[in-house]
Length: 239
Picture 1 (spheres, helix red, strand yellow):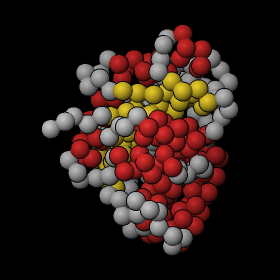
Picture 2: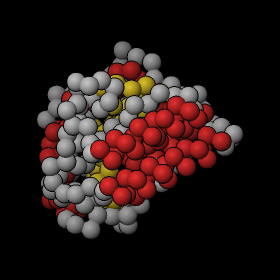
Picture 3: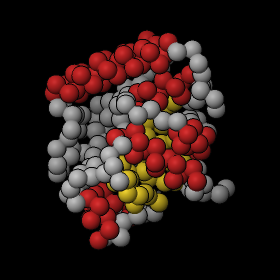
Picture 4: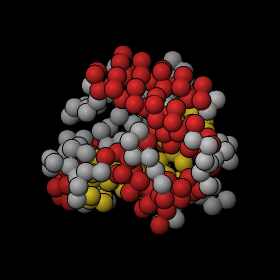
């Protein structure tokens, strides 16, 4: 059986202190995954670090946000014929050793999208994020359970793998504001199989996250409204 071609999509915004370690962890992994860093109009020296270290990347001349950056990666995956694309954060929070875990259900034909979850069990990941983010995550999970009848324990996880059909779909159309939970609503409506597996995540070592306590509350409210609107929209996405 031919081995699946897997691409790691790494969105990066102002990650000059993290991106080398992130890419090195991928290069040192025995699975030898392909990767592409999407420099999302960083204002620091991220681009220079990528260029000086010959890191495979696409440079966006202006900041598109996480949705636009990730969609750029999906376009790259689609036009280069990859079988599976994996979103992988540039800040070092995702552990490359779990990539095979989130890809396996897709390879086995049990899922179209597989999400790496910190909350599926209580033992795999010691790092669970802040209280406010966990609160927001729980509310978003409840919203998904109510409106699309899908149990997702880590709906905002950016560590996830998708198959070739979804690569094509996301290359053509990908949510820009709240891509992780909104895309789950769209995929559920299109009858794609959603699955989670437990993963361990790390705390950010360098830099500062753009989402703080009050932003977490605002994010939670806006995402909940987006899920409500998307779920009430009866138009189904085409496979």
